[in-house]
Length: 327
Image 1: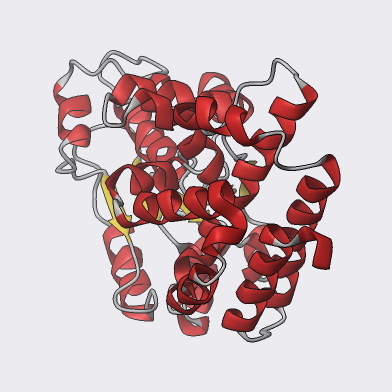
Image 2: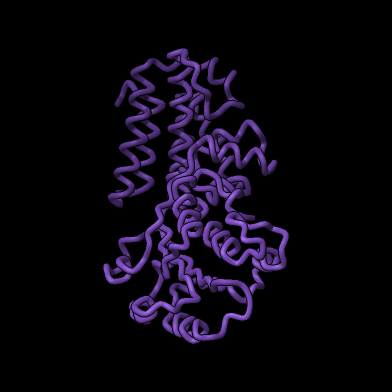
């Protein structure tokens, strides 16, 4: 793994590599952006390139330093993560002690603080003391998806590098290379992941979510003949708090695919494996039916964020989808 392994983050990587090339390294960096887009990989790759014995700005992957970095047993690389629900002051104090140790090999020690938004207030204060007088041989990298959780005194002492959500195309390319998912599900997973590679990989391991997808499709396909199933489904989903957004997006993508087939555009379907079945029912739904269904899903998301009863919201949504004339 090196900078070449990180896709979709060209702007962020250019900043890091320009600092390395120009010898203009900051004592502290804050890698900010959505979860699962390569921030931690970039931090480790940064440490690897800084200490590469071949002075390769990417990391040669051959020298003893790069190999040790890859195996996470290089003395110049430290990864700090939450212990329990937070990153505690003792973890930062230990860093301060270690930063004073002599550099026996390589060029820079790199301390990576992952999920840095989990720092306790005491740990933040301890970290600030280090950043006020950063050791010359140490680079500290804070990794977070919540930069607003840090006081200005921390932010002002960090070089901020912004990472972005991965594009649908980028996620698709990565999934194709990994060969861990059925090809026809790649467009759907890439969209459900909402720009996060870690989310995309999670979906490749979750069978339950795709079992629910089959039930969703059956409801959309059969509509009124399965109206009683709506209540069973809504009750079951109300217990799946962490999956609701994904399940609603699955409903949304089926409706979107029907709309695309009705319009006759060349846009690829998210549910490519259902293309023939969706084509067969596209005329069962009028344009008004599809628009009302999409509106019902989007409204449901808003209601659920407002803590309205999950089961009631879902029942109402499904009634609007299978009985649009009542909406």
